[in-house]
Length: 459
Image (cartoon, rainbow, N blue to C red):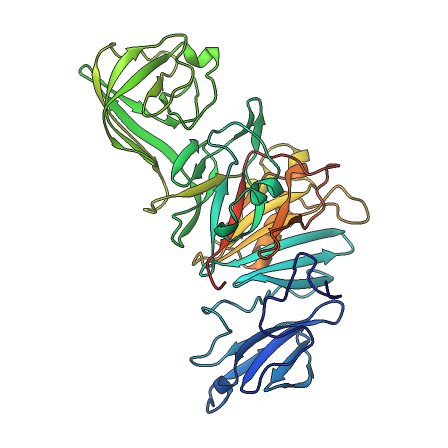
């Protein structure tokens, strides 16, 4: 590998070689690598001609390449081209500019990992902390929830989850996601929605979610529904989240045996005419008395668990069931993972950063977080190393919120941290997966789920 290439790469991502020149008739902007190697973002030189209103705004050291020769270096960190009708090569993807406040970090390194996706490495020497930020243009990438199994139980490392995605998925990165249970192992504490399947239900906390078609939300999702029989209607407030305090439904995606406290109030629902699946269950079912085997279900068979004090439905009764996910502002959700707490809302740090959990949870720790701009066109996935004196001590919840605001997020969510914090990249050519940060455990920790980022622009 040539000296100065990004450590995760096996070949240049642009049409110009490092420290090289562009063909006549083209121009480009390049920001130098720390080892002095320039990586080039090309655009058509014709965009520069006959445009009196075009401006070139420069904010740091860049080289300007034009028609096969190099103009002198200009004093700027990032160059942004703003010319009518012109854009950087590709489908209008951004150049990777990161306008941090002055003095926020002692050093900033930016690497282009795919069209519209950049890895920023930020270092603050005095704190100290070290952050890795995957900066994604959602016009050129999409997010996908990763569990690694068809059921809610189970743990795998973030890098293994990314490596397990098919080569043709064009998955370029993954970050650990929700907090999870140790018993049953790996069950996410909040909603895990994967390819439209409710693997683990809402837990009353915020989630990062998408419809898979470019719309993203950071919001609280809930399960709500009714089951109506001959004698009465019953409100449902849980889905694949068994709780003796709430009546709800468990389906075949859950895959975790019910404990004895829940099983005391369980009835089986055998399908008669199913009309809804995925993020909505609907249809006619026949109520059956539970048996010792009714701790797991398969196919369209369901388990109804009743809240404490709620009388059972008459066995043999045919009921109408309707259950759905609600609270996503009209978006038909396809992928979702949870976290806590919400760090930023409406561009302001939330009060939860000073009240969530205990002092140890709020204090200096390795962190993972996700944030988005108001339009949902730009998403930042951040990991901050911690518990490494002299290298990176981590961040408090409040500091993590301030980081997300500095990046430009108007809404941001804290993900599982500590030894779980990991950001992995996959080389799209060689297929190798590397963790770019330094997890605080001796080895990378298996986690309950992750978020994968898949490229959708270019080849």
